[in-house]
Image (cartoon, rainbow, N blue to C red; front, side, top):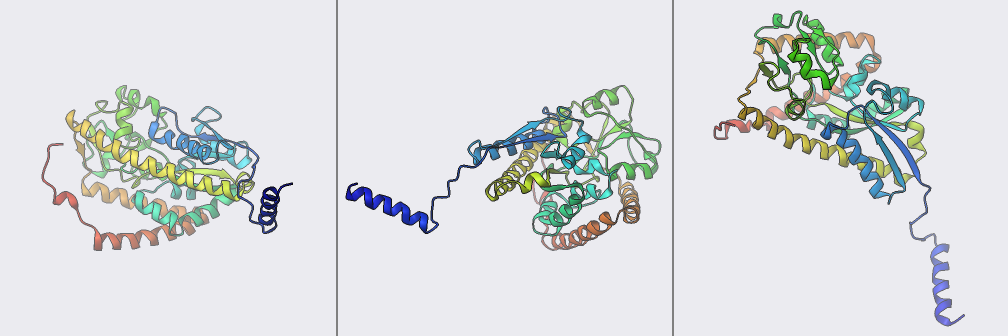
Length: 360
C-alpha cells in the first residue's frame, strides 16, 4: 500500500474511532397510511394532508412515504379516530370537534364558540399549555396530536329568513359543523340536521333545511351556496377559525427515529402554515366575488349575539359536569383567552376605521 493510501485509511480509522463518522445512515424505509376526513375536492383542507406527506417524502429522500386517503376512501370521516386508536392506520387528518360526542374535550382542539381566533389558538397550542393538555387527553386514545392548520375567517352561514331576534332560531332546521355548535343551536330552539357537505346546496334549494353553515367564503362559493337562499351571515360565532389536527398513533410515532420524528413535526408545521395562508387569500377573493354578485354579508343584531353567547356559556357549564378532561383543559383555555383579550385591548388597532371606503 502506498503512503497516500496509508494516510487516507488512517484518517478514516481515526474519524471512526473518535465517533465522528458522517451522520448519513441507511435507515429502513417507513410506510404509513393517513386517512383524511375531507374529500379531495376541498383543495385547501385536503391539500394540507397532501402537502404534509409531500414534505415528509422530500425531507427523507423518499425513505418515509405516507399514502394519503380522502374521506370515505378507507373509512368514514367519523371512523378515523377509532382507526388511529386501534393502529389500523398510522395517522388521521381531521377536525377534532367532530368527535364531541365521544368526549366534549375533543372540541377544544378544533375551536369553540366565542373562543380563540386562529392566531391565538396557534399561540396557545405552541407557546401556552394547549398542545401539552390536548396530548395528555389524546393519550387515553393512544394518539398524539399536531396542528394541521386553521381556516381563519368563519361565517355563520346561509339563511332562508332573516334573524332579527333570538326567537327566530326556534324550530329552524339548520346544518352546522357539529360539536358544541349543535348543542348551542338546540338550546336556542333550532333543530340541527345532518346533511352531507356535497348535498348542502340542494338541501337549501329544495327546502329540506332552512339554513346551513359550512366553513368560510371560499368553501361556500366552491359548494355553490351563493344564491341558494337570500341571507348570508357573518362572521361565525362558532369559532374564530376551525383548527385542524393530525392525529398519530402513539406506537407508530414512538417507533420512528429521532430524525423522522423531527421531520414529521416540521412537515406538519409547514403544511399548516401554508393552509392558513391559502385560506386568507382565497377568502378575500371570494368576498370580492360575492360583492360583485351583489350578495351582501349580514350581521346578527347584538341582542342575538348576546343570546347565543349565553347559550354557549350554559353548554360549557354542562360540559364541566360531564367531562373532567373538558373542565381541566377549558379552564386553561379561558385563562389564556382572558390574557389575549387584555393584549388586544391595549395593542389592537381597528385598521378598517383608517382605510378609505371602497365598494368591494
